[in-house]
Length: 278
Image (cartoon, rainbow, N blue to C red; front, side):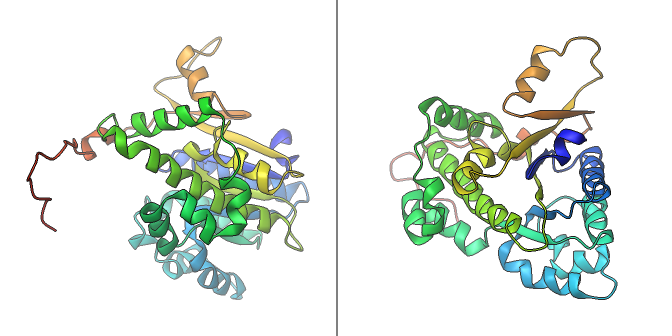
């Protein structure tokens, strides 16, 4: 844990539904406090327009994870069962640490999807250092590949560049919130609870934070999963998963439905075909 606790900002890139990953995150929070640090704990799962509700829970005499769950409407959010995340929230609440929302509000996200990244950068100029920074061609192509594979190759190629732009916009917004949190009085560093797809270099949050918080050390930790324990040198598959992270933690893969089954095949409309109703 020493390398993790020595960083200004640690990104804990999870599989959202893996209970072991959330246990590891809670231990990182406990370890930082045990070492005398008082980090802000930021969550991709919480929108910045929910911060007043979050602060109200934190200001109560005995804040609880159940009160937090109700205040942010977790059960209606679409994120996995709150019980998975409860250990992380309980660790932060137990130590009375700042809990900070990192994700953009829905109206901003809709504007980004609708209008594109250039318009979004004009509307939110504080993100311009990230959104206007040159992106290496190979990194941009790799992000497109991740969009393609992440949707099981079932989306039209024409959709992928805009999806990659949206991800970059989300990451710029979250990096801005992280950079602000780590400069707050009475805060010593930041622990970020976030999906692993946002933590991989050369882009992701490490790229965005390099533009917005260049003086801060950023450690990207990949919380990975493999089908079965590996003995000896890491396999090529594990090395591929670990690429782009500074440090990795590996857990055994959990059983889950095939995510590709939830993604419908897209087909081009023929001339004169009406769009689907609704």
